[in-house]
Length: 558
Ligand code: SF4
Image (cartoon, rainbow, N blue to C red; front, side, top):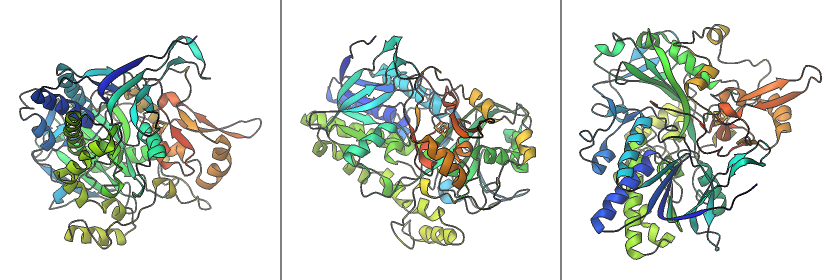
């Protein structure tokens, strides 16, 4: 049984309830009120609630929020803590060395530790009060185009109520066509709509390949008397163990309110070891003596994972096309060296809002009108920040000592370095094949088995603590294009790395005892929507598509 597809029309449609789109929606309403413009604005979000799919470290530079709402603190912005001091450690397996000076880009004193889930939830309440129609539980399934096949006219939301074979069930509801004069794509890193738009409109043509990092994060409840109670610093970053000098990434620990901490490990997906298990590395980080001292007596209350883009300026796509704008992480608006993207995402959304107000004054929504966004970006402080780190991802993808030389020269030359616009490989192309006798670099038996279920939880308990849910009887949203390739070439060449890079334990390589044949099993209901598999699969054999709206993680304090 099928029902007719509904159409709804708005002036502006924001897709995704991240900081870029919410700041953009609020700023749009502020400017529209000033101009006396009456705009119909909508925002859709695939998570069941606003904030349920939002995950970040997070220390936020409040510069953009101050511009948007100078009174943000008295207006009730959910700040967990304000950074009173930074500490930067180099870790070896058993010891640590605190750097006497924190690198300038990592100095966060005065910035706010926040939960991104809580921040976007709060921003959504403000946007709603200003008249934005907010629809959580609606995924964007495809971009809609005008007859010319290139002008974006809106988004079709995902169907609900299909069975695992894709057939409509009795409760089937077809997706809705949400049409708008301008559609703003703010889906976060590796968005599926932007990916498909790129195939049609060449958004990333001529750019360096986008590169990514995966962050695994926990919020840990500590006892009242804990490491940070009397510590002069509450913002900690680490380099070194467990990743070593060849793999870029590091750890973070931030003090939150109510004796909680935010703890995570971020790993560049340009890593080369096919046996690396990202979750095992995260557990190793937690077991380091310094980290153990900081988390002693704690209990994990929420866990999650997400990729972030770190490619920088040379990976920024076309920001405007006919009828659409791209903002936030989807548009590479990340200050990679500082590991910060919330303020840059917010500012990009605000610049998009200024562009749209101008377009409404002109009554034109084609690229020539929306290109103002590119101009505003080029003249803004975010351009300066992102441009300064334009060769950073490329430098840290090198091995030592080349990495150190490039980084030092970039510091001395304001980001230019030895070669400006250094090249970089796509993350899917960096794994080395298995060597004879190669075994896992991580996950020694003692680490795999010593999960106490409280401070150290295994992958599946972590998925449980992310409150991830998917209706089981729906089509699998993780499309493995050629399952035979997984069993034949990928297993023998790379040892099925998806079974290790997925932090949700979604992929398992089963062996049928009778036939002795292997088969890739995809436990899609564990998917944390982090997108690592689509990025890191060495054969680009996995495509992440949106499951039913409302499914996925249920973050509340991430
Ligand atoms: Fe992340 Fe892919 Fe695993 Fe889902 S299946 S948790 S997107 S790596």
